[in-house]
Structure formats: structure tokens, C-alpha cells
Length: 321
Image (cartoon, rainbow, N blue to C red; front, side, top):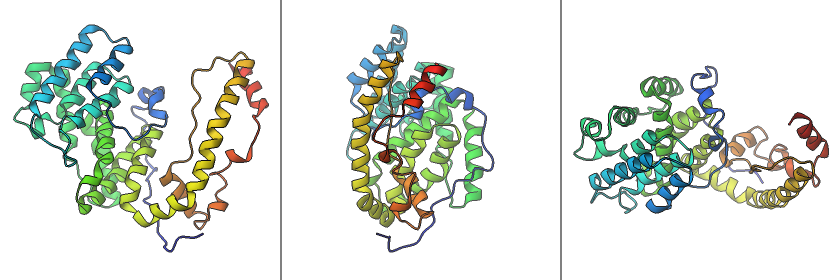
């Protein structure tokens, strides 16, 4: 079945690859993995996760202090969804805990909207939490002023400006985590804002995450923006690929225990087995090359053609381990 429209996806300009910061990111496993839509589990769960990571007591105390400061600062404020405003910095901070970022970055995540949306200033943050956390919060505040105007030339300039202003990789990662949660709650905004923010997300945030090696985070941002930018295309793809996605999910769930068993037979310690179907927006861009014929998109269903494990692959793993 073919869609009743023709369109071209937003093209990512890859001519000027950003190499700076890559070495800091390439070994961060969390940034390369798939993650479900992220909604905070709550304060208790966040601190339990932080403690389970072996963080020292003084770090936990700092995070609790930052959370309480943010909670009181945002008291009475609501998100467009009707939730208490603190739910947003809480969700952003929890994602950084999962990423295992350091305590100053997580504390800044709690505080990142305080200077814009409350009576408190960067000076107040500095007095209460010190120069490092105030620096991160101020960096995020500056990045909030960057707005996308709609051209690829502008997007490229903004991506460079984004990194130049940030100065610290933690500011960039915090801002990306902030954008993920904002995209997850985008449906509560007016339609005109939805499309502008979604377009900005793909052109600036998803593209930047991709260049920095955060491939899964980039894919998540693209998928969150997809239905707002190309609603008809998203609906068509969802309807026509639903069965294939279900088949791939079943295949993945069936093959993972088999793979784990074979690895153990080869005395290879299994730390984690990760697999996923292609992101929807990525699939959409690839389908454009095949006249939107899902049957021609061989890369999409390559895994489903194999019913047995490749033992040659396991031998290669053992040889190289």
C-alpha cells in the first residue's frame, strides 16, 4: 500500500561533523541504548536509584537540597498538562541519574528552570549551591534563548552556536534531556507551538544528539517530533507497519534468550543484550528511497529472515574476546 502524498523529510546536514566532545560520549552506554517514553517514577525512586549507584552521602544530600530548593521555588506553578511544575525538573534529573552524570549536573537539572520561571536568580543559585552548579544552570538558561527560524542554514548556525554557548558537555546533555520530556508532553500545547517546537527538535536537538554520538536519544527525539511535523505520514506508517513491528518485537524477544544461551555455552559473560526495531522516523526516511513500499525496505526486516543464530559470529566473538 502506498501513501496518498509525496514529501521529503528534513535533511540532516552532515557535511561538518562535530568531533569535539565525542570522546566523552562514545563510552556512555546509556546514550547508545533504546529507552521508552520517559516519565518520572517519583522522588523516592529517583533517590533510591542514585543511592543504588553507590553515590556518597554528601552527593545524595546535595541532590536532596537541590530538589527541595526547586520544589519550593516552583510551588504553585503548573505545567500545561495540569501537573505540578516540579514534575518536569524531576523527570529531567531522573534521566541524568540514569545516565550516571555527576551530582552537580543532576542538581542543575532540578534547578534548570528556576532562574527563568521563579523569583530566584543565578546569583541566588551561586550563593546556595556554588559556582559550578550556577554555571550549568546559567548555560541552560542561555540555550533557552536559541530559537529556530526555519532554514537549514539557520539550523547549522544554531547547532554551532549551541555548542559554543554551552561550554560544558553537561549543559548540552541536560538540555537534551530537558527537550525529551518537553516533547513527551507536547500534546498539551496549542497546535502552532507543537509544530514549531517539533521542527526545532528535529533540526537542532535530534541532529546535535546524532553528531555527538547519542544515536538512540536522537532517534527518540525524531520519533517524538514525527507525528507533529508529518501527521499524515506518521499515521500511514503506523497503520502499515504495525504488523511488521509486532513481528519484529516477537522475534527479538524470542531470539534474546537463545543468544544468551549460546554465549554462555561459549563461556562469554553476558552483560546485556540489546535489540530494537528501527525508529519510525528513520524508517520513514528510508521508505522514501523505496517509493514508500515497505516490502522493498530490506533493511527493515533483515533480522526476521534468519531463524537460527549465526554460530560463526559467536566464534568470532570468542576469538576477539
